[in-house]
Length: 383
Ligand code: V47
Image 1 (spheres, protein in one colour):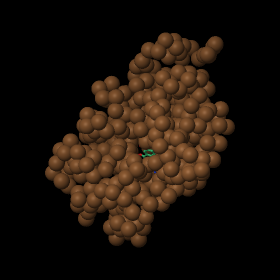
Image 2 (cartoon, rainbow, N blue to C red):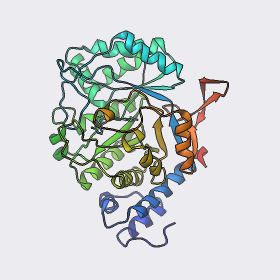
Image 3 (tube, helix red, strand yellow):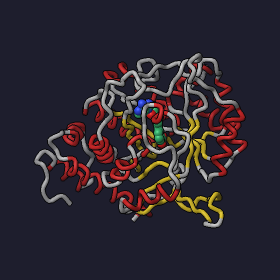
């Protein structure tokens, strides 16, 4: 382990080595620019190895954004459109089904569904989309919607979160994505997305989902003008909910892409900032199993490096991603299985294909599109 370290990091190091939880002020130390990134990274890597040994996870997935038309005007979003914008679209049932079929044919285990809050589409349309996909592709895990969408569905249907989630589960929902969390602190949230679900709503919806037995993910969007204390506040709010429910599977730090957004004058976070966020999240979120280095947002090189800074998951092969690419993201549109495995191997880890719920996936090499779940991949089986 670290023989010498920056004096400010010493008390944090002792706590991490003895497995003690870090507090708010220790989180701030991790973000202190005087504290070398490589030291914070080594601490995070120690925690990652304790949890996952040498394993790093990926899945085969595709994205589906049924519409980009959205009532909200989040300052960081380049994806959304107004109804009459030339780039505005809403997919037909046939297009949605085609996306599901393509996912099955390419061996995907998961479809990641998010989109705009379309003011001319009723609650029934969103339910119908899940039913359609679930009936046509029953083996595909539908990881769908953010808490912000659930909040919108509640408004449309005049139902509680529990009622909405129960309807969605009956229609085929498998889990919730972690999007829409942005930065919880009102000083920032009110500047970048004042009208949509606030931190309390976002957290309450995930709490309700967890109590219904749904697993969910969680995110933080950084680089939108927030400071270190806003990020630590965000991470601690997630950690507190996780203490109550244990329903979060993975945390995804999302690097802001400014192009085509109302925050276009902000710089895109550097790779060093990306790596520090990965490492700090691994160290602060001691009760969330996985930290995802989402290569689409981080770029392939940084995502690969992140596997040595606390991350243990690269997300998936991905195709049809729009949110990051509309905002100037230059990552490839898709990775092949061989490419994502190669990324992981080059980082010195052993690639493990997982399903959305982090169960190991097994495939017959002669029938690569077919798959089955083998066992739960957990800390206990990792080393
Ligand atoms: O909710 C929007 C963010 C999220 C931009 O759950 C932006 O496993 C950067 O949540 N620059 C959507 N970020 C993506 C997301 C996600 C991705 C991968 C895996 C999972 C998971 C979740 O992206 C949005 C918002 O927070 N976002 N615009 C932008 N310009």
